[in-house]
Amino acid sequence: MDEKSLTGYELSKDFFNFMYENPNIANPTSTALYFFIIEHSNRMGWKQVFRLPTSMAMDAIGIKNYKTYIKALNILIDTGFIRMVEKSKNQYSANIIALVKNTKALTKALTKASTKHMAKQVQSTVSIDKLLNLLNSKPIFITSLNNTKRNKFYFLCIHSSNKAPKYKQNAIPNIISNNIKSWKLSSIINNLKIKDYTNQNTELQENISTLNECIKFKEAELKEFKELNIKQSLEEKNILENKISILENDLQDALNKKELFKSRNKEINFQLQNFKYKVLDLEKKLMDSQFNLAVEKREKNPLLR
Image (cartoon, rainbow, N blue to C red; front, side, top):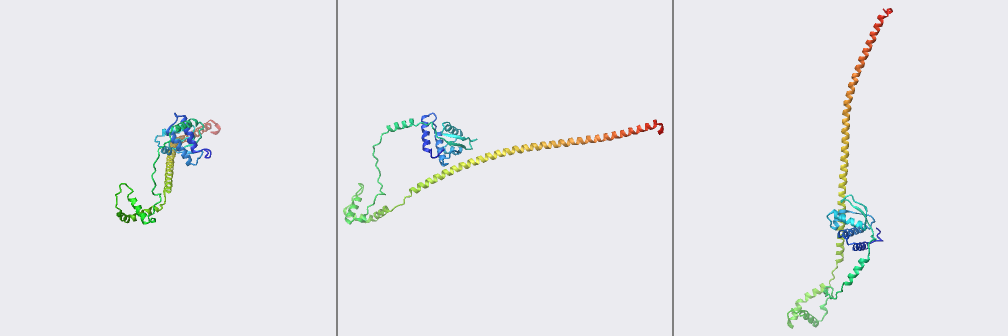
């Protein structure tokens, strides 16, 4: 997705326009998932294609059931708000998706309904009483007044409340002498400029929340990485066990063939030895027959007698 041509505001506007036109498709789970995908894409730098870890998305929008998550994801895919680039093999791996601008969203119906709703509203005319901020008001410096004006000021301060007791005229100097130190101290406190750390505290809180989100995101990635490693190690273990069993079977077959060949070799040696004895016996018989034949020829030939 191109960051310059498309923003999160435009995506959310198109999404709500489409859901207003199609109330039968509108689903709070798919809405939460879509806005989390926009936020995740923003954190990833608006990459065109990015990974969406299943466990992290389910934790972010509070889904416990994997089927509910898949249903919401399929709604976003079917309505054309996201495009599935590569589907995960199981619930422990990440889908690879891309944000898409939905051109099916119409703006007329929702804009017209919003205009009618705003026309029905009546502006309130009730006034709101705002409390005075006494801390920011300028203090009155009593020391700058002369004695007469100072006495009158103290007298008015004492009798400004309806519940305040009525003092006699000659009791005012005693009250002034007893409370003048506290009034001077309060005027000094009002003049003190206390440094405002509100902005710094806000920035620190934002940084802490950002760090917590990053930690949560890294933990989700680590969990997914561990699960993938465990799965891969189990698959490799099964493959190795299968190979070992095949090799053991081959070895056993080879040993059996070796024993068979040994037994056959014994039989062949025995037969060979028998054949040798038979050949010797035949040679002896041949020699005997030749000797007998020579004896017969000698007896029959008169010249050899």
